[in-house]
Image (cartoon, rainbow, N blue to C red; front, side, top):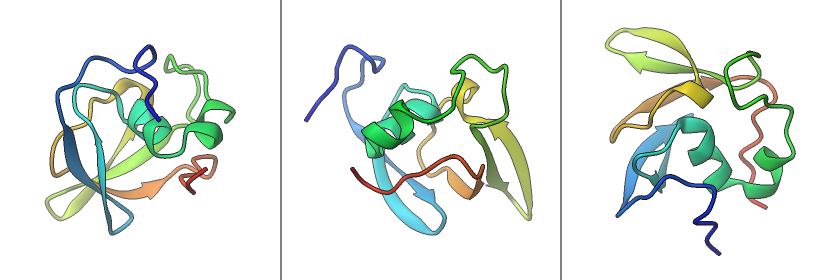
Length: 95
């Protein structure tokens, strides 16, 4: 099932790692949109502001030996990104 009207245009899926699991997500999109791609219902109806005013979409990305916190609604996905922690409200169980 596709939802082209909510995603930024993309030509391919790229691989990222979420909590040790390899996942394929659309390039050229924010992490939160990528999470929505993976779990449409759970993310669409989650408590997210989508504009950076809350911290409900915060994730921690591995950078070398450290982790850095990002707001997934304001962070573009990059190939090979390793997300090591998710805010409590991010439910990526598949619909």
